[in-house]
Image 1 (tube, one colour):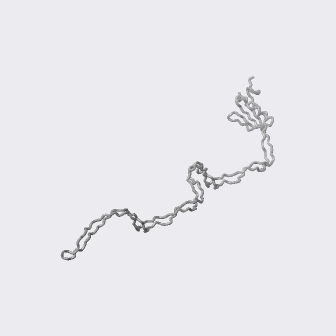
Image 2 (image 1 turned 180 degrees about the vertical axis):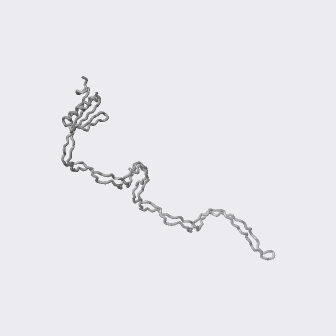
Image 3 (image 1 turned 90 degrees about the horizontal axis):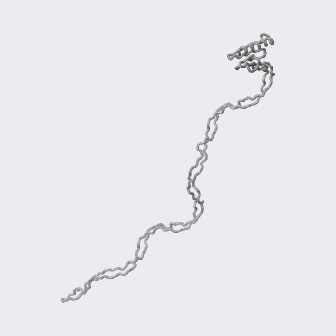
Length: 266
């Protein structure tokens, strides 16, 4: 039923074209594997296709018109810089920021003049001889008392020595007394206390502080590729005259069981 309906439409359309345009008007009939038919009638394109229970008929009139030459403004991509290698300096992060403990010399007292007492050497140590009064404590002493002799004549008239008193040991007390003596003594270094004006330099103290170390960057030279750079420009271009085809739909119908006069049961 579908094929007969499509054949009737094609036959009718070809008959109308033969009457209107002549026997050579209907040409280039084509039928593809889906059953759709398309052909050219003069300056009209006819397409007949089946979809389900419906048959679509589309007729477009093709007219050729001449467009004269004219200028148009077009956006053109213009190469402004060719791709090339280049050396660039970049800041590269080598150590992120972090807290750290460092030892610092902190000034606790500024330099100033001050008066201080100092022991100054005025005489170096040496040996010397001195006279001293030395106390000799009292003590017992002993002395020998010699015998006493006397010369007298004997019975013969000669002179002889006769002991009158025998000698003896006499013990006596010697009281305390002072004696003058010379001694060799060591004289040590002699110092004298003097007040001097001295400069007290700056005084520093070592302290451990927690400080923030910011990000550390390093400048590195890298070789990078710069691609081609284009720039969009508007240029005035001459377009020569030409012919173009303009399609105007004149017939766009659908025939089937629910539409049109074909395909309805009578």
